[in-house]
Length: 409
Image 1 (cartoon, rainbow, N blue to C red):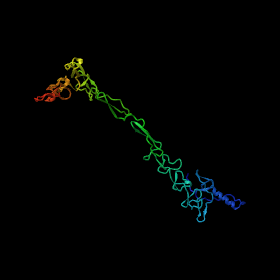
Image 2 (cartoon, rainbow, N blue to C red):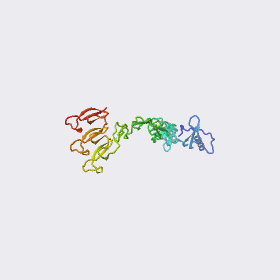
Image 3 (cartoon, rainbow, N blue to C red):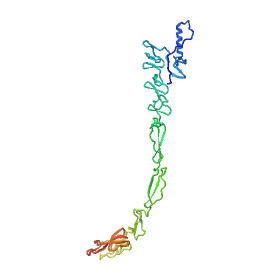
Image 4 (cartoon, helix red, strand yellow):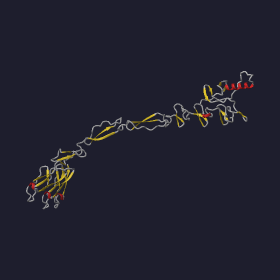
């Protein structure tokens, strides 16, 4: 509501019109009341406002006040004299004060300005609001919001009835203002400031890469080798670097290089070839006669009518196995090259055991850092470190040594 100037008691202006004698004194009094209602000296300097006081609008320095001023003579109270005027006692009845004056604490007072009572309908001047029946400042930061569309001064926002400088006060933001932050791997997410100066929820992370910038990744390559790659600044993997540390072979693979007949070597878990060949590439076979071809040893003898007469129950057939593997048993008392005897025994598969004489030998491959062998000599690549007597290698009745301990040179 626009500022209202203080109303002062109406000053009566002498009537200048000529009295109509035909109408008598009553007509003269009527004209005087009309002139009094036409102009008001509210400043005390001769300046007047208008139009008439019984109109619905009074214009004061160009400002329009939506108020109707009662042009009638202010009511009187027989007990207190004149009432209803500014700073005068309030009158009794439905109209306690004249014009836009309001009755406050029994006195008619001006209204609408800061610190004054609120006018009718809780009205106050522009930049003020009615709070507890009194006009107080509003619209500035820290003050209450003003009524109407322009609730706060420029730059301030009405939040829960108070004007706040959103975006300046700690923990607040300006409504509609966006904010962005990094997320994931080089991704971004945004949020918007709400109308109440609080931040909304973050959006989903967008544009994220496959890795974290600067991260390293490695993998196996070649034969027990490794290679690595780096995550670039754009959160994508750079090319793999050169494979390093690769060795001889793929674990589990086989090869016959440097191996004897029917033998092979198998690549170890460390991607290295073993020093000796231990695998077999040939299969066992049965043939007529009592001897096996090179690279094979006899594992048993038998008699077969397909190889001749079996009337005397003499053997005429031999079962041969390849000289390969970690160990095997062979008919006879000697082992093929690359193997050493570990024990002797008698087996009916190799002939008669009636005299309890040995007719079978157990052979083991010449591998490892050390081993024990029947006899008193070590194979090439090894040297003896001790001698002993073992019943697995023969009789120990004379306490003579029949076993040697061999260590790799």
